[in-house]
Length: 125
Image (cartoon, rainbow, N blue to C red; front, side, top):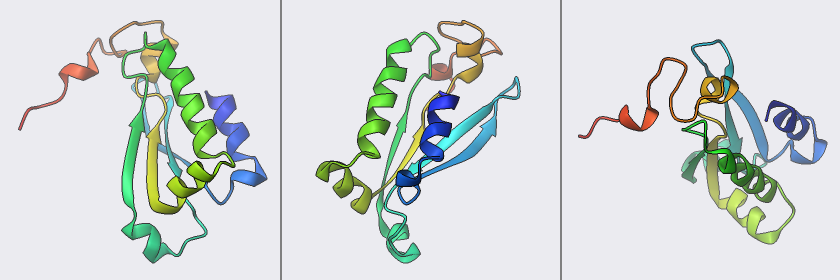
């Protein structure tokens, strides 16, 4: 994932549509990426008015197929198709490509490094 994101980040063709920042560090100190896909050539005022889309994957480390889904989604969103351009022009897309990084690195199937199932962390209003 890190090599793939670095490749996208360093590609001159994606500089006006892709941004990568560190959202936070995991318990083990690994960086958790936050990606933004939009048309960055738009004015800051226009970008602020765009509706948002949030996409995340790998909440459970055993969801290996989600990494392939995320790669396909990213390839499409930064690609040359008319549909992708329409999405970038009209939406601010925030992506966390791997939520449970420590669990993936350590071979867990469901829980974080601390033994927590992230699906059980949410509090009902």
